[in-house]
Length: 129
Length: 129
DNA sequence: TAATTAATGCAACCGAGTTGCGTTTTGCAA
DNA sequence: TTGCAAAACGCAACTCGGTTGCATTAATTA
Image (cartoon, rainbow over all chains, first blue to last red; front, side, top):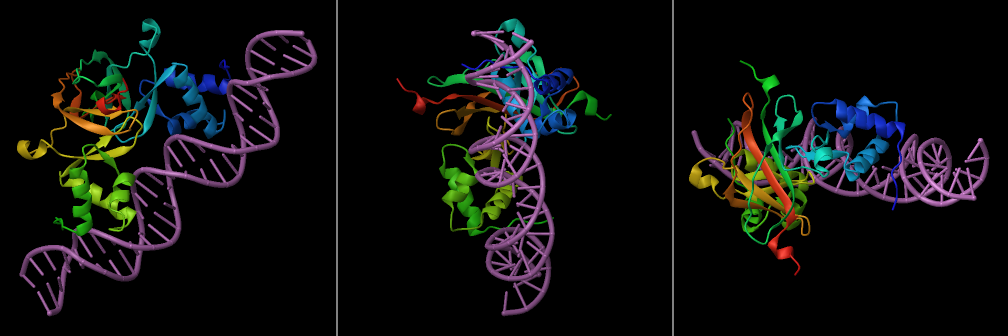
């Protein structure tokens, strides 16, 4: 069992994710921590942070991976991933709608591991009226 | 306005999608229609079929794009995409759970365009007992 | 059957993510 | 405080899904 270490690069990435109000992709994150480390390192840091349950990974509707802070995870002592995500087709930002939990019931013999619930549309900020 | 044409390659791709019980990726489809056309053509055919509402595109939980037949779309005269998808972590297959529709209500000022609802886990076929 | 243009093949390209390996750095323990 | 094992890193090269440009082929329809 390998115990995780803290590095400035890892902290920088985590800070950016926690600071952001929406989920960030690896390219966006690399841009924001540029100079701190190599792009490959960002990938490896993200994998580790996900494994350590410090952040969670969201698949956007276009297939790109994004990373967001775990808001409820600390309090619940586990990952709470039964909430909706909203993906704006204008600004491309994806955010967690933590309040909205969804009830699903599957036919028998389906064993649920994780939920991926994303709604695409236009977010309040991008609404033109 | 360009009117679509029917080609053997297009028909071959559509046949494979309709024949399958689960959603297929471009690489899988290209493998199945191998010899019929180039791999780039498969991409273009898939784009066209989606645009013509003959198939629909599903983002898998790993970010890969998959294509499935539109089961309810003909009868409803439009795309019915408010149903769940199930993605098996064992066999990697993704299927539509057409019966299960989901009710979601967002905070105001969010304009919904499309729903992406996928559950990952183990499908009945892959259950070991 | 000829003309229009949608569809194709091919080659080159792009971008996200991965791998291998030698080097640096962290954290614990002597 | 220093030494050491291994976690973390940098760099280069690679993989793979998907895209683009352009010249050629083939489906429609008149």
